[in-house]
Length: 130
Figure 1 (spheres, helix red, strand yellow):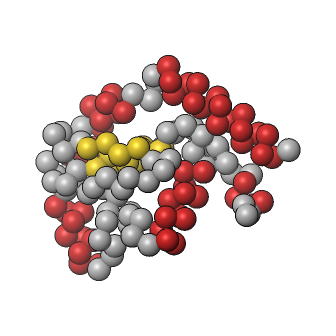
Figure 2: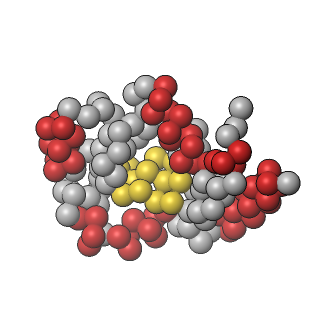
């Protein structure tokens, strides 16, 4: 059953691109529910750009004893989430700021499929409000 308070936020964000995200993966059912809820507020695409080369992120997660799967380090393979390996352009965490344009071009948020997907998700969100 969907919480009515959450339903009103469905499709609020057009697209979301996470790059080197220090977020726990879906190692538990609770985390899977959180990722599902996050994808529910995104009308278009939710993209996880990751690089196994990001040693800063790997060390920080191990130091904090957080989840084994980290969004910024690996594919999460979850419904509603696209995984994009950017390890060919990201050698370290600091590279995200200098490679932003390259990564966004690869994600291609302005493609014709994205416009149709966004309009469909926005319409679904509006009908859910009624």
